[in-house]
Length: 409
Image (tube, rainbow, N blue to C red; front, side, top):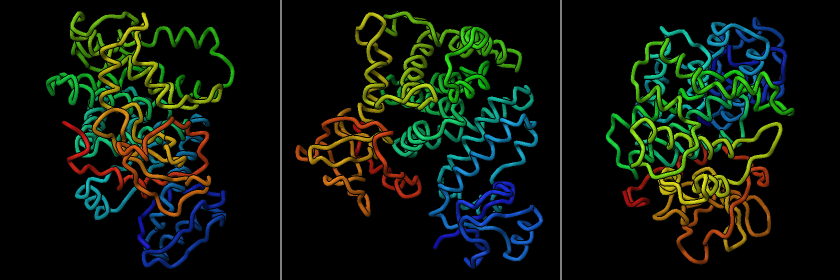
């Protein structure tokens, strides 16, 4: 058993525990489904046990419970200060270990991005944006497949922080395309990623609400949507962002004008890449009003421009992440269902891990397949909603580690 620390603030008082709480030695303090009646009781557990710990295998359940708590705080109109206090803390020793191992905490990154997008205090934006972009860029460089896997998985399964997850996924996709395919300089890549992270700054709250709203947008909501490009750029300007390329890319990220990238100025090129990635990521995410489409279909939609011709920015994104992206599900020629864990040597031959065998039964352990081999070729994409197997990021992410021979670049 591998224990990880959690804070009292991350546990909901008066609700059944979705995991067992243990002390520092692994001794049970409270079993799963136990209801902690008060904060005093929880503090007594922590004092008696030298802290609060859970088995790493339960960290996904902890993740969901924590997101539920944040969602309730936002729904109840709590201040950003109160929301910021409700964070998953870790000991200094554990934080140092995490930094050394460079294992991204995707829940923490969601929370960071959510706080950045909601707190528009100019004193906070620059520091938060630099920290978030730095972490995303580092993880994308060191483990591009793992980064894509985590963000695509979260986009398809968690809607209560839709704006944050969407912004991070679009930013990572744009950065990878700029670096691996378009071969843009690092300065331009950085501006592109930051523009993607802040493109919807002017409608963050509404965007999260719409993800859970069954009814079509009201006229007032539609007005906010239609104006959010300029609103976002104006907010960035007020917060001290003066880069004209960044600001114009945000203003133009919904402009629909077909044509090659080279015919556009720099800001318009960035805006076009963001628009294509934004289109893809939006189609992946579930909404209360609709189900998501399969990733392969979402990617195909961004490949064609407004004249149904090949779009250069869309093609760069497809070459970057593949027809079948890490975190998406596919059916193999063996009639097995697998999750994509790595991009392959071309866009249609990813590395996968089988989760459902040909008899329709979940596998005990993921079975690795190379779809470049004919007997294991991909025959179709499978929507997340059609796969009933629960994914544990802790179990699958190690399989996405790069070997240096998976991609030609």
